[in-house]
Image (tube, rainbow, N blue to C red; front, side):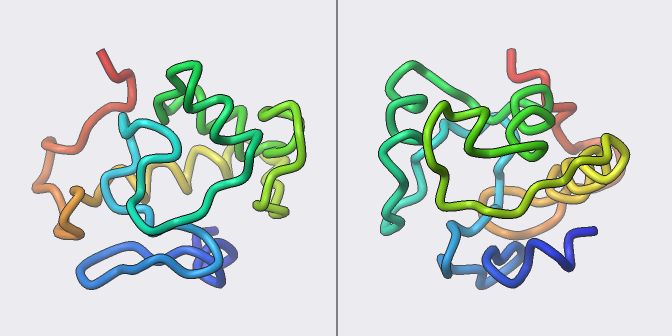
Length: 113
């Protein structure tokens, strides 16, 4: 499922911003915090409210980004199927902020305490 995302987003060692921000260390990262990326106003408004990308928040966002933000999102891809959203989140959870992968059982569970 991530193949649909990689047209705009990179993940892994050497990932950089493209049309969308790089997604290393996404789980439990503050929204709107990737340096050098210009986010939409609605996303920055949510970031100002303290949005953190938990698994729960990502499940809602990925279903319909603009609806979730309450305004037009730069991200136009919608993942309507819950299992596809869960798969993308599980895949992204494997990557640390530096782009390397967590070892078995080390990845965050997305609850963001």
